[in-house]
Length: 95
Image 1 (cartoon, rainbow, N blue to C red):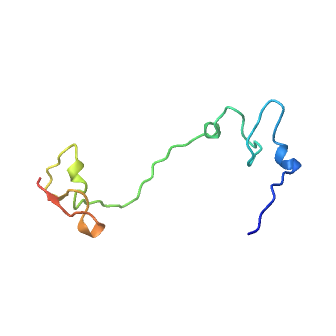
Image 2: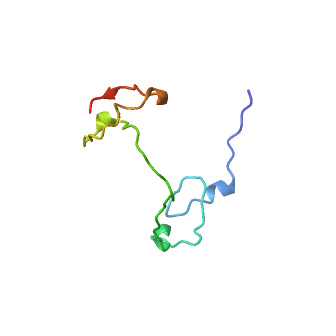
Image 3: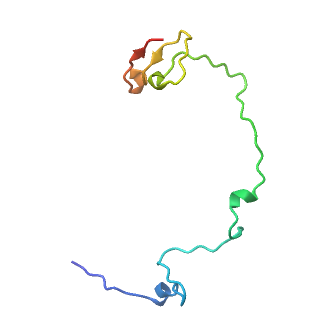
């Protein structure tokens, strides 16, 4: 079995200062940011709506209806969790 001798170099000890001891690892210089200020606060955000034109939605089933807080009487089937095709139990609940 090969052994690797424990070697230290001057670069490995250059991270220590007289007042602070830091653990070895990667260090990154600060670019384009200021200390104490989140970079996300520096951006002027613009809110937009995402709309799919000509999208007609017709519900066919309620899923996870076993955890419903508000009961809806709309004539659609109510699945306890998911249909069997989606690895659920496929259990129908009464309206």
